[in-house]
View 1 (cartoon, rainbow, N blue to C red):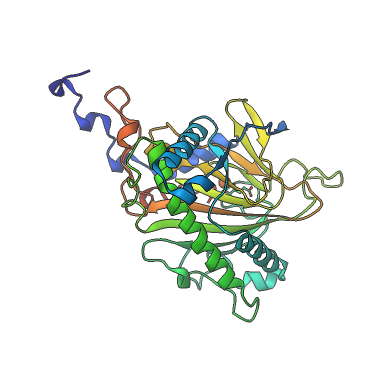
View 2 (cartoon, protein in one colour):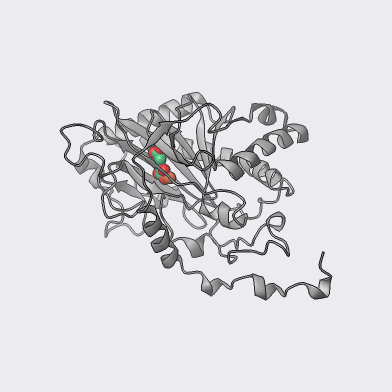
Length: 357
Ligand SMILES: O=C(O)CCC(=O)C(=O)O
Ligand SMILES: [Fe+2]
């Protein structure tokens, strides 16, 4: 153990903010992703993607139950980067009605959806609204992503009314359902924070300040059927439902109604498909949690395809700290022997990195 006076000065271990170049990081991730070989994919074996049941903790709120789930989450984030979350607080009826609303949205004629096209000249807020099929963004790639999506977001100073919505009579009830779901999943995310704090050896309330005004994005994605691997499709194999990427998030909470999500398993050193577990969230940690934990938690690459003869829908919720909150290396994740590898940037400062969101 070093004496106080022998400690390296803090400025030697912390990179100053201006040294973080989000554009360079985006280019680096993009270049890296194009080198990932994805042709061999195997089914996950039981245990490859841990299942974490939080029902006992939700029910009791006890320290003992918190410690039990936190240990499971810690292990999942350190070794796999993904887990399936069950026993959570979002009601099955709400999940079902949200999927129904998302299906109804995507059943609308494209012209109708294009009325609220993302990043149109007449809407001041970027990154929200309808993203058409074969879009080359989110993640940005040379080849289009074979999905279409509707996105809403919220953050410090941005509320639901700032998003693009269809006119009320186009799809009655759609906005109410999506808003109700967004509230419920935000509430779940907030309840998971003490689990992550405990998992990291911190006080359960550690993240309360950082998430006072969280930065979140909800994506409602449709992957059309039969676009991959079909014999009569000359582009088979060349395009993805969503191209391989890592998420920029603290964590992502994803609902899926059919198979297609494929993740890179570090323990196996191969790509595995995430099983569809009824009512479960597929949870993964992203780049921001990786940075905040000094690489202790994984941010794992993944992609999705839809080989099925029916449409696939997925609803990822991307969750981040308050946009202006500086994320300085967590106290339990750095030491004299393990100095911070990343600058204490905020989510707002790192937003150019939009691989998966
Ligand atoms: O649809 C999926 O299963 C994955 C979606 C995803 O990774 C994303 O939108 O970031
Ligand atoms: Fe993703």
